[in-house]
Structure formats: C-alpha cells, structure tokens
Length: 353
Image 1 (cartoon, rainbow, N blue to C red):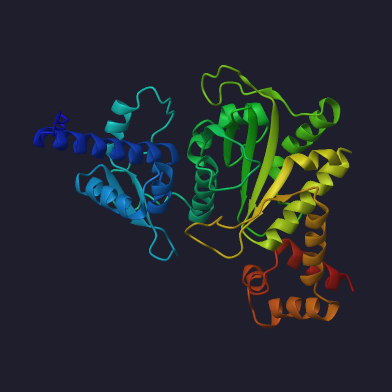
Image 2 (tube, one colour):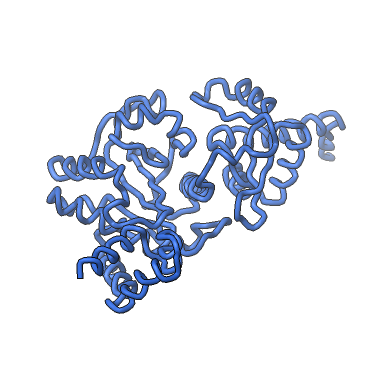
C-alpha cells in the first residue's frame, strides 16, 4: 500500500504564511524601538534573535513603508540608529496595547531625532548592556531576566523609580527569582568624589539592609507593572565603566561608602564591567564580570592607581601648561587623561607652595 502523497500548500497559503512572518518580524522591531527609544541594527538583530542580514532587509522595508526613520550616530563608524515615525507609533499602540508603555517616542522627521541626546554613546552603551543581559549574551551570575526597563523607560518612570530607590539608575532588570539588578553607566572621567554621587544614598541604604537582614529586599512599587510578587528579594548593583580609570574611581567611591556604613559584605552584591576603548558593535564580547570584593579586583585597582600616578615634577609641568600654552582646563585634562578635579587639586598644591 502506497503512502498518501503529502498535501501541498497553495500559493496563497505560502504567501499568507510569509506575510505573517514578515509582520511578526516588523512588530518585534517596533516593540524594541518603542521600549528603548532608538536602537542600532545590531541591537535590533540581537533583540529579535535574527541575523544581521535578515535585519538589514527588515529595517530597509520598514523605512520604505515609513514605519521607522534612520540616522547615523555621531562620531560612530557608520552605525545607524532607528526610531519610530508617527505611523510606526500608531502601529505600536494598536498591536501592543497591553504592553504598558508609559511613553512612546515619536519623531516627525527622519533627521535630528538624536539631537536631543547629548550623550549618544552613554545611551548606546546602556542599551547594548541591557540587551546583552536579556538575551544571555553576558555571563552574569546565570540570571534569567523576566522584566526589564531600559534607560528610555526608566526616564519615563523616574518619579516611581526614585521613590523606590532614592536615585534613578540607567536601567533596571528583574530575575525570575525576584532579584533586582540596578545598572549604572559610567562613561565620563570624573574625580573620585563625584563618581556615583546620585547613587550614594542608595548604596548606603542597600549596605545597611544587607548588614541587618543579609539581603536588600523591598517593594517594587509597581515599577515593572503588575507582578505576582510585588517585592524584590535581593539586589545586585552593576557599574558599566567605559575605561579602566573610570572603573578605579568608581571602585574607590563604592569602597568608601562600604567602609562608612561598616558593611564590606555588601561588596558581594556589587560588580563591574570595564570596556576598554569606544566600541560600537558587540561591546561586551569576551568581557568578564569583576566582583567588588574579589581580592584580584582589589589588586587590579591598586596596580592601576600606581600606573596612573604622576610624580611631582610631571604634575608641575602639567599645571604650567595650563598657563604657558593658554589652554583651557578641559583641554589640559583631556590631553593627559585626567579629571578636572585632579587638575584643580594639582593647581592648589602648587599654588600653596
């Protein structure tokens, strides 16, 4: 007895199936852009679990049908970012009516939508880290992320977030075991005293809770919408640092807070990712998590401090350049990769003598 021949799909059935897949892909793109504000093609491909080639065709089609705009990032090697048109926003609100978007950014022109973001790379770095975390491209304690708020959504909910944390981090994530992850992007070299200023109170509260209760739990206060469990059970603070020197300054700032609160054990809940050089694609590829309390991390901070310490004659030479070459403080600080506060401290040092 011969097997019955398999029924073949009609042309219309194939066409409808392809159309459904195409619409699903487009909706994934629209959802990602609505959630993050704007994204690069590589970031969209990661978020939608699509190849770079497939995403190129998808965004090209969506630009042609006026659902999205594209614009190159300032000072980037041909990196384009994508944002929603009014037509794209209308489709987001129709398809994702129950997504709980508090704010959907819409742009009426295809050029200039990035002009309101003074620090493009900061946002790009924040988006990249969170996407890699959500899509398991970062090895971070093997956590499974169930809810997340990118910088775009954190800013839209900043009053609620501030009420919960007494600060506004750059991004938030929640794991399947209700562990809160607070993400702070440190992209600017500043003095040790200024790094993490907006997080000082939060870190002190976190340390005190760990000291007395062995965990930093609290109410989420609806920040992630309606949850079965409205509390977080513990917390991790992650600093993403755009250079080794920034990392050392932040580490020292955090260490002073932990010593002040007499709770060094809270360092187990604090970690860092250090990015060397300004990258635009796959930024966190092969980067390791640095735990605050790890003795090897302490040695790394100490070794780096020795390497970047200037002798007295070199400090005097740098201060003299400020006057002899008629350069601004910012120009001199950038030339020697030091912070403005460090330069000012050296000026006071030699003025006093």
